Every structure is written in structure tokens, then in C-alpha cells.
Length: 290
Image (cartoon, rainbow, N blue to C red; front, top):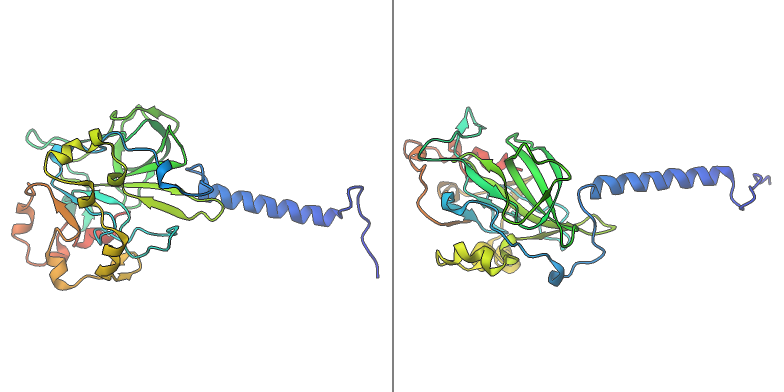
């Protein structure tokens, strides 16, 4: 039997080459998984940086979806604890300006200005890319307290003065959406080496000051968050990313939502007889949002 000549370190050149290829492959996978976040080795709820500012201009919000509800679409991919078929984020409002079944950015009017979006804590913008609907961009803000934790703001129009690498301060106005538009807000961290995602609701980590506008309306943080047991008891069903809903559920536009006030755009639905063609969380738009 013949053996290849070993180098001075005791490894053949072929083995070294294979090891280098494996290392580069691991590095590449790690980059794809963790390129927008510093990974955590373990998760401790006590370490989660607080949400110190309400991210959305609340006086123009009429409904907010519950974390773990079936509003929008399934958002639970790679959940660290195995939760699946539920929306692990909160929607503010639901989109209502749809042309030919395509969601478009609504335009402000004197009576209905754009909705301002704010930084939820001191942090750094680590990601800003066009969303797949497409409408606006998806922006990630890593916490200055611990950059392993980041808030995602979906479908926003980021201020032209801000970009990846920009530092933002809690409560700073950073973007807008149209007066008839929605915004999705997620709070996440990724675990190393699995790449699994820890999904959190901003309402579970808001300071008293940040939550004060909701408290003034008579709400508690738990009103906006279903527990895992509560979500399990609802027995959601999914087909891909889409929730499977009954006809009665499709007719209820506020299924999975907390209503803060009357929908100022209710007139858009008054002449609609088929809820599947309506805008909003139970219509076609529900499965197209990211």
C-alpha cells in the first residue's frame, strides 16, 4: 500500500485543501445566516434590550395584530423553540390601497398625512433592502445595548439621510409610510451555530414610558400578545406561508387584531361583496406581505 508524502506538519496537501474548502463553506453559510446580526450562544429573556420608544405614530393607527395570531401570513420560520404556523410579529393597521390586486403606496392628503416611523431604541441600521411585495424597504436596527437583538421594520420609506451603518437614537423619526398603509414590526435574535431565530414581541419588552400611549387607551401589553398556549389552542392551519381560514374568518377583518379605533377607510369595503377581493388582512394582500 502506498501513502502520500506528508508535509512537515503531518498533513497531506490534499487534506489541507479539503479542510480549507470546508472552512470556507462554513464561513459562507455563517455569513448568509448571520450577516445582519451578531449571533447569541444562548437566549435569556432578562438580557433582551428594552423597547424605549413606540416605533409607530399611534394617533394614525386603528388596529394592531396580536403576536402569534393568524394575521397576515405565517412568520415563524426556523423558530428556536419549534413554534410554527403563526405570525411572530405585530402588524400596525392593514394595507388598503390596492390597485389591480397589487398593494401600492398611498398618498397623503391634508386630512390624512403620512404616518411617521421612529427608532425603537438607540441602535445601528444593519440592513436596508427592497421588500418582496415590493413596497418600501425592510430595515433592521440592531440595539446599541446588545447588537445581537434587532428590530425589523417592514415596508417603510427610510429617510434619505439614513443608510446601513447609520446610528439612530430612541424615538428619532427615521421613516414614513402612507396614511392608508400598514407596517409590520418584528423583534428577533439569532442563535449560533444553529441559525435558529428567537422571535419576540416588542410589547413584551416596552418600557412603561414607551407603552404609556397604549395604557392611556386602556390596554395592557398582554392585549397585543397571545401566549404560546393560547395560539396552540386556536389550531391554526397553514398552506405554505398562507393561513387556511374559514369563510366566517375571512369576513371578519379584525380577526387576530386589537381595534384601537374605527377604521377611517371602512368605506373602501362597504361596496365589496367578496372579502377575498378586498384589501386588508383577510383578503389577497394577506399572503403577499413579508
